[in-house]
Image 1: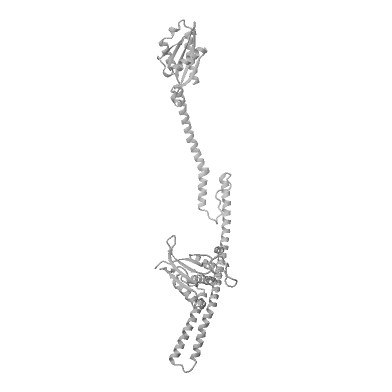
Image 2: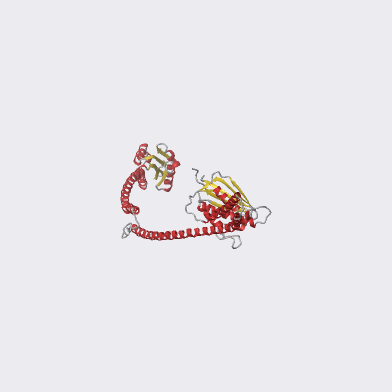
Length: 467
């Protein structure tokens, strides 16, 4: 643009010098002269000013007319050349191309004037566009070359080492001491190799420690299971002791009856019918003693060949029959509401026998401690239900009307060795063992109750599918 400005001023100055050396400047500035000047400057408009009278080719310069007149007046007033760059379209300044307005003063024999032109800068834009295209081509070629070189270097320096690293990682075995990459490399991958090798050594050490820990945990788990079995057997023997104490008197009565019948059989003069009658009654009493002793032995014996399938209703009935045989419990009322249509649980009989017996003995103790006016009552009920996944379960509820449960004791009912009984009357393991057995069978156990309003024991056990 500076070159175009200097070119325009030079041509206009040359024309001005010619005019100032001519006696009659008005004759020099003919229409043909202005037209030739317009062609030489590649101007869109040429304007002549003599004593504030403006003549232009073409007749009007369009929107640049006023700007050119203003520039001519400024050159005349200053007595020096004047130039200005304007937008060809002022409404679109960002996208509009530029125009050069140049003017020089003219003075001769008291006549003041000037000559100016509006010159397009298209040649400048053409040069810029040509240089820009060359620059774009140069930039594209350099980008392709540098990208290709950078890609090959990236593949060699990064991709291949990473592929090698992945291959070694997939094929890594703990018994091999193969480094991932050469530790002699001084770049980042060499440092990475060193770090990975150290990490693998630590992983191998941790794996060995983990194996030792697992072996220790397995050993401790075996000891824990043994301790748990001993605790279960201890609680079972405590329950047997309580049952045996209650049944001792019941066994003594039949024995006295049998002794009496034997004495009668030893007397003479008995008819054959009387002998048969006394003998039959003696056998009935002995069978009663044998049944009670057999129940105790079955409960105390540790079974290892249980099928893992137990019918709940017969087991509950058997427990009630055994307890009702004791005359000291004759005042208790036992109720059965066995509404479950399917009662074959996926559990071993021995575990359920112990759980139900522990709950019954706790209910009996709670009723004996209650000094209320009503008769002691223990109610058994069963219903079929399902869990959230639709698996069949049986719910067993054992309810009593004993002393109930204090609010301060509710959170500690299943703690080992926690008991509200006097020393010597309970081990504090009954509910804890029962809870562990039910959980071990895949069931749930819960106790609810309020002080003075009895208690309820809820048990959920998984059922076997009907075959």
